[in-house]
Length: 160
Image (cartoon, helix red, strand yellow):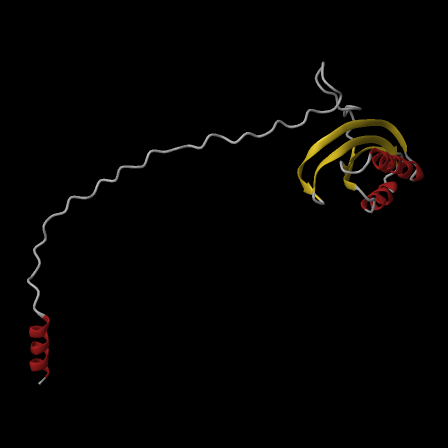
């Protein structure tokens, strides 16, 4: 089967020193070569905040590697990347025919994709308290209550 084109996205720990991150990326490239593949492009996206904490870390350094390799090599590459220290996440995706070679930013900015804009909380909606009208009450005539002593005496005489 001919080689397919894949994208490998790596997210290394931002807390790792630059030397360690370089070693992680070099190791990924060696795994691709060992599996019979060739790297065609590498794109550094830089350090970015994570959508959620991974292993108690809130930021990671992203790198995208486009490569060609046989499909059989992907399992070995992924297995080794799963046990790589300070590599928070990785994902191998089959590149679609016609997909751009690199991700580019709008002109006049860096080549990395823009980080998402910070979310600002919306102003709280303050609603006026609803005015509750009390229903009109009509006077209800109540039967005069019997004193308790008279009620007890009436009950005693009825039971005899």
